[in-house]
Length: 398
Length: 160
Ligand SMILES: Cc1ncc(COP(=O)(O)O)c(C=O)c1O
Image (cartoon, rainbow over all chains, first blue to last red):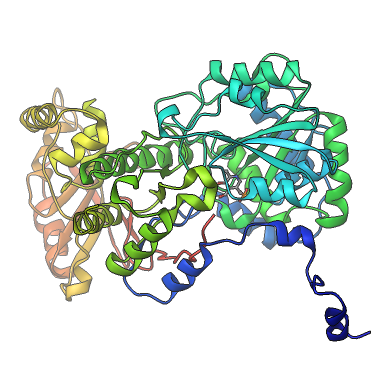
């Protein structure tokens, strides 16, 4: 039977799976197609560092290529990388993970997140997460057959997800809580005691917690708390971490998961068939990053912090209320005062003033009324973008 | 606090007091006061601009000169160093460890001019025992800045 005749038989027949149909289409793509065709655009849209990977890291990878490190590695990742990672987690958080059974090197946090969901979810399971959230969170749950359950957060509660709100949504189907602080798109960081309250809920209801800590080192004037360090949480946490943001290594595609033997073993079973291993060159670079990347990170964090202060003040001066982000490299101002939806704001700002931001609605319903501005770009560009935005907001009084 | 301000000025001397105030969360008036103070006590020596003179076809000859000297009783190396660093041609002067004592960076318009400086001014100074001059053939990096071919990588318009 040919495809066309089949589709005539069933009006619901589709070439693509129903599961994929469930994913919300990205409303942002069209802006970025538009953006690519325009000249002179200042982009605060890209969610990645503007720094090139520090030279000592690039150099280590180049050397590995010269020596011929071009083959697959162990499914788990290079032993030396897992050892370094184990040491890093010990040094930073006093957490002990066995490099041979409790750590898995993945193709970015992206893969680690996907594996974690697929490894733990059954079709009826629910995963509770904050709204707004990083775009992959709900999609990965849906692709694994689970159901994402949203907990609204907003500027008034500092975009922190509250333990009480989580608990109110726990049902017999709840399998896990998925959080990511410092957060994309809001820049929110959660305090230790509020995370401890969430840990308490996880313990009481026997839930797993997937904690995406890819921005762990990008905090300004506050401490990052690793979720697995909270009482009794190491056994319940699937800790996801990466190199993309902290070491400016987005294109290398390396990340990791740290969890119990059982969870890691389950993740490896998927990873071995779907990915085999993370890029070898990227893994070598990651070893160098862990061994001697600290100074470069400190320098980049200092730079981000200056830009953060400039953009937040600038946005406030324009008259947009802006929550004070304490981590990652995003500001998430409210544009409700303009009377525009976040998509309208984004589209008009791009067309009229050539500044690209991302509509908050791309990150969940509760993101409506906000736009995400990534300040991982030069100070000069930030200031120019701010002055264009100022003109734009003044031109469109509500 | 002053260190944060100095770090910002060191990377860009044109950063305004107001901008620095925003970046450091220090009130503008306080930033201004701290900068004034730093200028007064010579923590801040000068505000300058780094220029790649090659771009405007301005020829410059750079030479690194090793100078071996006999230290003088009571004065050590300092008085000879002073006689050398007072010359405008001597851009940078360091006392160094190793097989020679002073390292002098001299800049002139022509090789001839630099050679004259070495042979007629520097070498004859009493206490200078010998010099070795290295003319620079190419400047790759200057005070942290790469002069040519710094990567201008364009980010792809991706989103997440
Ligand atoms: C919160 C968050 N998690 C994960 C990722 C994906 O990172 P990776 O490059 O490690 O796959 C991103 C990238 O934007 C992110 O913002």
